[in-house]
Structure formats: structure tokens, C-alpha cells
Image (cartoon, rainbow, N blue to C red):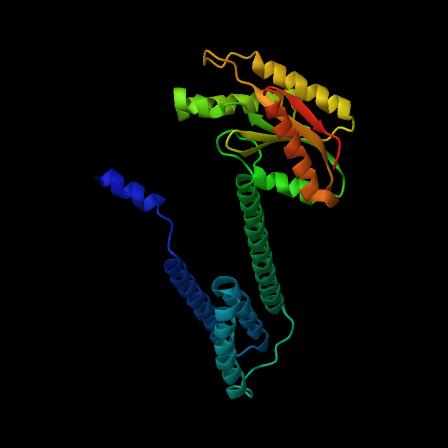
Length: 290
């Protein structure tokens, strides 16, 4: 029981209120120390530079808003002190002590500025990395690890160049789920995604469109090469043993996607897929007319 409590204490991060309270206490300690240094300097004027530390530390610890409030309050008190003792402050020669005082103040201010800037850079870097991870998750299909439809839309709509594009449907996939269950169906989809990726490599985009539908964005220039690779992929999948006592086949509709003709391009390729289904499945049709 004791170990559990200790572990909880060690792994529980401090709350925002606890961090704010510790920052305020630390700032008060620094303020008291600076005030004591000024008070114990025998009214030497050069020691007033110590007060410059407070505004920087207050903004660093309390954020700009509350740091500004604290700095203003401190300035009012400090100004009153200076004016009230205006005739008491002694002009000091620039001695080793005064030089050390100014140097120390400069180093403290410089160090605080560097620490604050580094902290900002680290926070920005963490935020950028988190955004990249979120973007990757948002564009990734969790079952297959392929890119999803959101990524596909970004690729197609954010490009001004035409793309060779194919829509793929797994033939009679509903029977797989009905006969063997959804777990087996998910296994088949995962294996299909692996074979498709192997067939087209990392240089092309393999997309899970949704359900048993996939898509391929081909970055090569030759229609013949594209059709040839699609045909080889179909044959490889048709001959692969998925352990279902029946082959798994694909129907493919392919064509050229034109960003300026978004709807008509997709409609033509979708019609090509429909013709492949009508032709007896495990077929490939290319859309030549738009």
C-alpha cells in the first residue's frame, strides 16, 4: 500500500495552481533578496540596478499579464523609495564592487532571457510534433495502416497536376464477413493492404477508401505501366491463399484524375469500376472518356 502511494506521488504531475503558487513564492523571495541588497548597500546608487531583475523574473514566472501587474506594483513601491530617499542616495565611484554588481545583474537578466526563449522554443517544438502526430493519425486508417480518405482528398484537391487513379472494390466481401465473421474480414483487409503496398511500393499512395474499397494514386507517367501493375496486383491477390477455401478477387476501375474536373473524373472512374463488376468481377476497366 505504501509503495502504491509513493508511486502515485512520484508520477502525479503538479497542478497549475500548485505551479502558480510556487512561482509566486519564489518571486517574493527574489524580491525580498533584491530589496535587502538595496537596503544593506549604505545607500549606494549603483545598487539600484538590482531592481531591474524583478520585472524580467515576474514575466518569466507569472506570464505576461500577471507579471506586468506585479512589475507595476513593484515599480510604484520602488519609485516611492527612490523619490523618498532622493537626497540620501550616495553617488559612488565605479569600483570593483559596482562593476561586479552591474556584471552580475547583466548575467542574471541575460540568463533569464535565454532560459525563457529556450523554453518557448521547446514548447513550440513539442506543439509542432504533437500537431504532426495528430495530422498523421487523422489521415491514417487504424485497421490497415494505410492512408485514409481524408488524405486522398488532400492529395487530389491540393494538386494542379493530373494523376493516374484507380478505385478498387473487393468482390463479394460481404460473404467473407457473413461466413467467417468480422475478425476474419479485418484480417483479410489487412493482408490485402500489405499486398497492395508491396505491389506499388512506397512511392505511390495506397488508400483505404472505406469498408472493402481501396484506391491507388499512381505517380508514374505511363498509363500502360499503371494498368500493368494493377493487373499484376489483381493476379497476385487472386492466387494468394487467404485461408478461406475460396479466392479473394478485386474489381478495378482506373483512369486519369483531373483536378479541374473533380466530379466528372471521379464519376468516370467509378463508372469504370461498375463496368468491371458487370463484366464478371476480377476485372479491370480504364476510363478513357470524360
